[in-house]
Amino acid sequence: NYSVSVQNNQENNSSSEYAMSFDGVDDYVSCPESVIPTSGDFSVSFWMNSSEIQSPGAKEIVSQGISGQANFYIGELNGNFRLSDDWQDTGIPFPNDGVWHYYVLVKSEGGTIFYIDGEIGGVGPPIGNPTAEPFTIGSHIISTLELFNGWIDELSVWDISLSETQVNTYMDCVLSGNEDGLVGYWNFEDNNLDVVLDYVNNNHGVFVGAPE
Image (cartoon, rainbow, N blue to C red; front, side, top):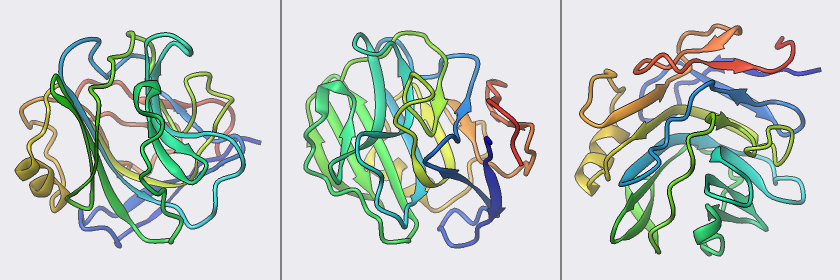
């Protein structure tokens, strides 16, 4: 059976109350529209907590596009982060320490920066933009594959490249939904097991199956 849990969370710096749990077996959220821009700069930020080693094979936290073509994802493979097909071998360890961490991917024409808890965790090539396919949370573009095991909170997508100052500012606050450049924001605070509300463009995520 499909199930996603929303539980109390007061351990990350955003002061949010709830987060969403994915079991790595059959849990994911599908949004009907795309959110990562198909050209230009963008940023993706989220809090994540994973206390168990991911099962063998790749796992994705977010994804968009067409597999094997123009696509984007943030995920894990062989114990390290992989950040789209253009930057798979990041060498950045994927944590399984049961601690909340804040991650931000910033893509610009000059390259890609991956922040961990407000500090630069890695710098890579400019990754490609995905096609305008539905945005997925907790799994691969093909939604039944590469499912993530852990907690996700305060997920946001931007059509700008966030500065290091902005990264650190947003790490310590809850977004209003009106910030410049913000194009998608799922904070999981609605505690509604029918949809996951997008507080910017109504690109609400839906569960595929029968959530408990």
